[in-house]
View 1 (cartoon, rainbow, N blue to C red):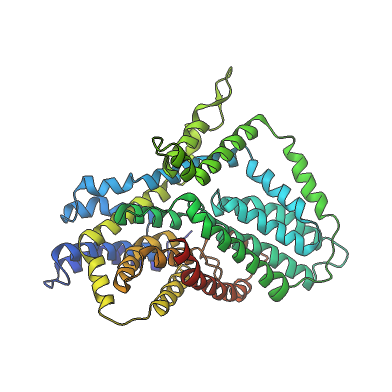
View 2: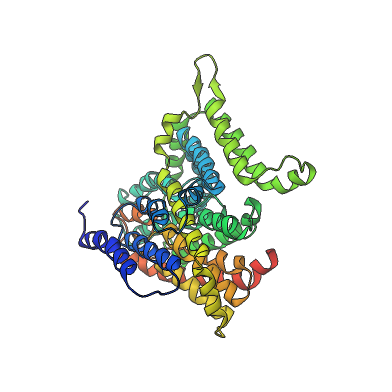
Amino acid sequence: MSYSRVKRFGLIAGPLLFVIINNLNIEFISEKADAVISVATWMITWWVTEAVSISVTALLPLVLFPLLKVMSINDVGANYGSPIVFLFFGGFVLALALEKVNLHKRIALNIIRLTGTSPNKVVLGFMIATGLLSMWISNTASTVVMLPIALSVIHLLINDNDGFTKKDQNFALSVMLGIAFSANAGGIATVIGTPPNSVLIGLLENEFHTEISFIKWMAFGLPFSIIMILAVYITLVKIMYPSKGLTFRTSENIILDEIDKLGKLTKKEKHVLVVFSITVFLWIFRGLINRFLPSLGLTDTIISIMAALTIFVIPHNVKKGEFIVEWKDTEKLSWGILILFGGGLALAKGMSSSGIVGLISMTISSYNIGIVFTAFVLITLMLFMTELMSNVALVAVLAPVIAGIAIGLDIPLIHLLIPVTMASSCAFMLPMATPPNAIVFASGYIKVKDMMKAGVVLNCIAIFLLMLLFIFVIPLLF
């Protein structure tokens, strides 16, 4: 891949803007706050242009904050070892185990088999399976699992007697876009489903001493995901790309053949299934367990690390000393995302401690801005900005600012931060917006205009649902 002009520009512009801001003889807010702004400008420039890896950019506070006397190296480094980082690490290890033993594929195939073999039911089956997987493993991995199976079904239509008709093309579009969009929406359902959720959880715990438990997040995240996936299904198969009258009878055989290739449930799969089930049970019922056993003090992070340790240390074959997941397997983990969490939390800490968040809240409180209108603008801004840049980086930069706005509006932080953060995972318009979008676009069955046509409608639906969440649901839960 060539290093584009935009990236080359960003590579130079980031540090150049940093130097310029630091050497201006103008004090914008305070010496410390201005230093944070200069670092934030460098980071945002590199994040937007992707001049270097977004995870490399996240390391800048470790060097610059101590040098600029914003925070000590110990205080900055603590953000990279935040409990939320280890919560996601445990989730990554659990997802790695599911993928290594192919349990995720078995689950997905059986869901598709249960939904039926008519074209619309096949699309629905792929979407449900992808959404369910994305709750627990990365949306990229869930899309990669589903894509070859979907391609096999599409090839049935290409090779039938009437060739690849308009109805066939519509089915191909529906199933491909359905997989990508369900992967995006599915991750919203859980804390570990997508990185922006965890960035928000970390910010709330680190800066505002507010905790959202795994089950509390699912109380609003899961219904939203289900409704959003249903909206995607109706939009694709009933409105945008209907394939009414299309029939194929051998798709069931493809699914059954794929299931047969996996064979019977292996010992490794059973072990992973048990650990996974117990972990999810503990996440969901942690509050109840702590109520009866208060001395235990279970947290979502402790449960996550317990699951990772169990996967690492319980052998599935004692005599041979074989373990389900070994440390060498962690080469496949998204270590960069964990660093990105730390960088985002460090930037948030810098903005808070330097008074930037306080200034934003004071500014907002001095104007009579409507709360609902402000929420609408922020949700819309986040949703359309995430089409163009990393949603994790966006949340890392904007979440502290939005916290300041919420304080200025005199409303609970969570009420505004949750829907805006969820909006960052609702990118349905462009291939470069999310890895699932890019993966299905690369299949060759989707044009940019096809994705944009459906994506604009779904973005509007997402904004509407998030506004309902903001007005009616979140205030009831918090």
